Image 1 (cartoon, rainbow over the protein chains, first blue to last red):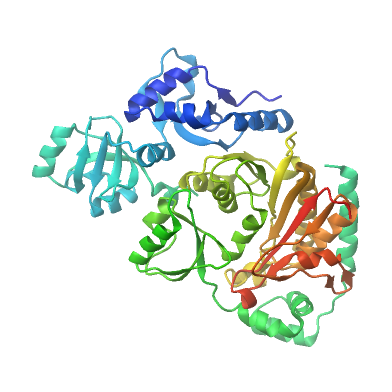
Image 2 (tube, rainbow over the protein chains, first blue to last red):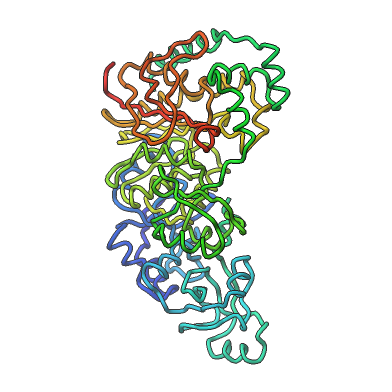
Length: 200
Length: 341
């Protein structure tokens, strides 16, 4: 049999803790306890973290044994992970890039309202084209907004747009908004426009 | 898959394919020139449509309205309708597709709205929604989408299954798998395991409750949308694809459980890819039969084509035509495994 290309993770708890820290909410733990039960990583060209349920795991194992193929996608895609995490003792936040799917779910189904910035129509349009967020486009912020940490970008209708990284802290952004509204304050990491630009 | 069965089916398909007796008349050549087809296609269409040939050809010259499938995993369809109407989109429900809407006019590109990006809907041909409704996958079932990419019908199945159960989505194309993955993510689907593999090499001890085989085809039903198909396919393409379809259907029969359902469909109106495939496989594989489709739309399947006669049960298959049903051309048949004929 070909070397296993997916792993049932031995660092699940650490991963859950880090992801909880990144998005400021216990969504992943809840998802696993309530719906999915299992967390797997698919590696190969990608190294990706998924949550699946027991039935899905049984089927994946069956297919692996009989067809020698690892899945291309399974259950819910949570994050892209650094392949080297299994070689290291501790996992760092930089090892994990949270997916659009998971963040959107956290915002819409789990009503996550921490680390959220709300943008006006113009800001929304630009964000969906993959552009960064200018201070003047921001109409509301749900703290904590911390430099270098993940924020969710939403529109004025409370609809999810994407994920960004603040280049400044909360108070600095407020100050910049008043003085230099065209200055970029949030780097757009990934937005829903990705599905058109790169999704295929 | 039983190799002996495959060899028998292959032999029978090729015998019957090459025995097809048709001749191209000067009138066929004239019509082919007038409408831009290869003459062999007109000859075959005359056999299928008889007195309605000109209506069929004229129908292929008309545009088919775009259609979308509302994704009620993410939004109630009534809310989506209101949102699109606010943007000036003129739409109406497709009577025979519970989540389908015709787009009559739209001031915006329907493939790049915010609602589309949020996964509130999927652009999908109206006829191509039918196979999944006919398969009717349930929340508790394990279902195979045997030629899944780019995942349009996979995500429709997930919707009917309320994101429960499991869908194994198999496809061979690397490029199209990328699109499948993107569609699954955008539409908020969580019950899919996607495997990139040639269906014919897919082995598992799982016996599926249901299988959707939306087989690769010439796309002869898509002429109103892709007029280049009038001249881009030959009889040789039909033969090659027919053999592939036979092999895939045999594999699907192998993978489905006793009493399980297979829905076979193509976006082609060519009998060589539809009735001839089904009739050949069921002639050799005796342990399955065609079952009646309850559908508010569609014409009957063919039971005769030139010198070939097919099983009477093929009348229970359905065919959709642009000129008659206002959709892309489509063929759908429902097969049940385990009912001896």
